[in-house]
Length: 440
Image 1 (cartoon, helix red, strand yellow):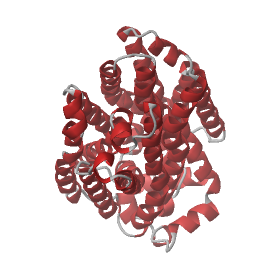
Image 2: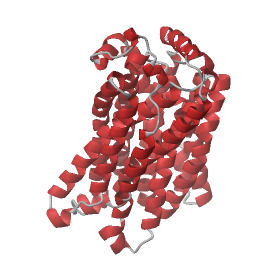
Image 3: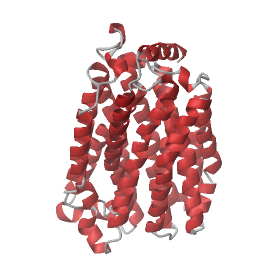
């Protein structure tokens, strides 16, 4: 990574900062990512609330249907590395901007179609098969989205404020969740019969607005400066993936490990917690409300953590999130189990804006600095999405299975601690650098 750091610093010095263009990129990145992740998070909320009985009505135990719905959630994560490979290749070879328009188009179209799907009662086995197929395509689109959105900011930001500016891209992730959670919070207030027949479809059908707004915004942003101004030998690799695996395997493994606690904790906190709450008799509306409020707070705390990394460095801030998760793994579920809304809210605030916020706020910079420009899109996308398989993809499904088997939360707490320990090992292997020294 040290050679990459040196190259990054030299590249930053050669690229003048355009404040007006930076504001435009921030707006495009935040809104585009928020709209994209709105689509992706909808499936997680629907899997916890309605997809089990509608698409996977097996046996007499509703938890079995929920478990199968979360298997579809895992399929989306399994598809994300494929999206990272395909769109990372396009982004490194041809255009960051073009690739981002493609990912948004694919995500918007598949999410809209999910809202039109007939259920198992109407077409039988074809309903879950269609849902899983569309979820797979969602995963492909998502796999190429994050890396490109991050690079449009990190490759254009001034060296001394990269943490702050790239943190804006992560606000889009929080914003997307807040929008999706709020949409389901409203529709789940419908009578159950109406929610199960048509109400759940409304948030998915709204993705047509996402597609139109997002594509318009991204068509009007400029290509990444670091990409367009790279030296001839630094760009247009014929097969970026092969260069990545051959020359940067350690960086790829570090990126995967750093992703585990951030992604695993977030999906267990705001997706599995809904299932756990239902299991112990807490109202769904209370949990969704608490998660939504916590994510609203995190929407702004991400900027704080990003700005703090500009002052004290990327690694110290990431350590705060990782160590915080180790400490909170058991108390999080203890607080939920009280059934008291105040304690539930405290659990969500400590888990999301504090622990998760510290990691996701610095993740764009700390991962970007692992790879040179010629394979950076591929490296970011693949590391980010392979890590997602073992955390956000398998995590909620494994958590549900553990809850069913042990009828307790402590195995899920141990899972969270395992994710955090792997990231701690990865952090130990990274060099200590100030954020303003790491730019490219």
